[in-house]
Image (cartoon, rainbow over all chains, first blue to last red; front, side, top):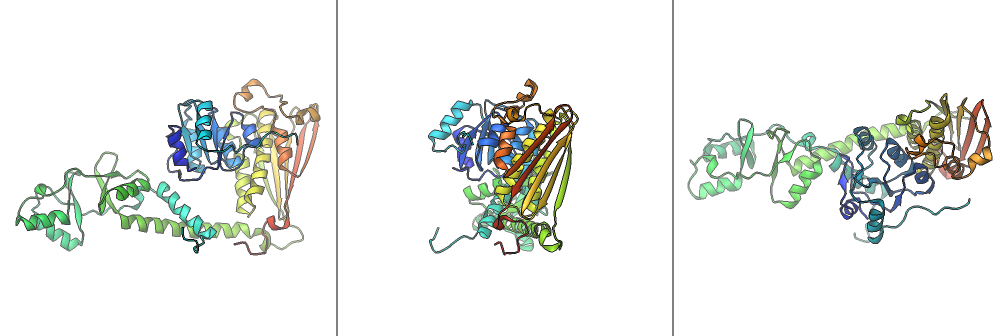
Amino acid sequence: MKLTELIKLIDGVVLTKGVNLNCEVLGGCGADLMSDVLAYSQPDAVLLTGLCTMQVVRTAMMADVAAIIFVRDKQPNDDIVQLANREKIPLISTVHGMFEVCGRLHCAGLQSLEHAYDEG
Amino acid sequence: MRKDRVITDGAANLISRVEELAYELTIGEVMSRNVKTIAPGTKMGDVMETFRHARISGAPVVSNGDLIGIVSLEDLIRALRESNIQAPVGEYMTRQVMTVKAASPLIEALKVFDQRHIGRLPVVDENNKLAGIITKGDITSGVMRSLQYDYQEEEVRKYRARHLFEDIISDRTSLTLRYKVKHGEFALGGNASSHIKKALLRLGASPQIARRCGIAIYEAEMNLIIHATRGGNIRIEIEPNQILMETLDDGPGIADIALAMTPGYSTAPDSIRELGFGAGMGLKNIHRCVDDMYLDSTPGRGTRLEMRINMQSQEQLGDTTHKS
């Protein structure tokens, strides 16, 4: 689904400036541990997270995340927003909790872009 | 979309770049600053002359820098029809003027043009004073100028880097990048990795190779920041058919390598876990991303991690076969 549509579904507030919101999001991934994002998420997913640090943006850059949604109204500081602006990764904040946001998006048809754990 | 029209990758790229520009460019960067304005007391007859000389079809009415109205050709025609050409402009101008801010992205102006049937939009600055005027034509020329500049810049840069391995003749060419990493420097965590990933993409690596490399070196970089008590070094050797990565430190070392490779096992302190790391997935992630991995460590002396990614013939950098 389009990111603009997704933002409406979760009552999102856009935090970045001058970053294109017209991209297509192929799926979602929810995680607070950045190593988990690197291990399991697939490219062009929207990342839902409660972790609000610089590392989230860096991880998103490495993992080709389409956009970051901070749940529970977490607000990143200016440095984080500026990095996201420079790297053109949309940052969105929502008051809803992780479970609620995952639920809404999943019900709206957004698939999981996180592959399951395997022993290999 | 018509079935007989195929949008090429190049065209699709251009279309999304235009969309991006609509968000990146500000109205201030695209508008005309040279605005013909009308003073409040002007008679409609003089407004007509101004329009004629300047060859415009509308103008803002400004008093002390403040926008108080806008007068257009339609208003002029009404005045003429009512044989009232000596009336002051205040009688015919529109007082409720739609404006946009100079600092807003271009997309805001596009939205207004889309929703309303107007030819021009006055642009105001942060103090609500008139800063310029924007028309649909300005938007088109602004975007075209940016695209052209972008295109030239990017072509020059891409050409220089992408053909590096083709242009230099040797028995074996490799490009080595080195980075120093400081212990505990979380603010810069991922900095070296993002430079490396960008360098690879510049050199023509596929997104998949750049991603695998990026993830592996990012985990390795974070390990240095978290565990290497005296910091460490990253070295990456890029060749057309392989990428060799190495991290080296003289920190505490790893007592049990097999244990360290177990998913979920981590020696990271709580302060690290609060930052979202220390999940114990780092080495496992690296192992998953690279083709060969070699971890050598002596407790008390330090750790050396070597990783290699091989590239198949289509993925090779500086491939002389034409890539469209």
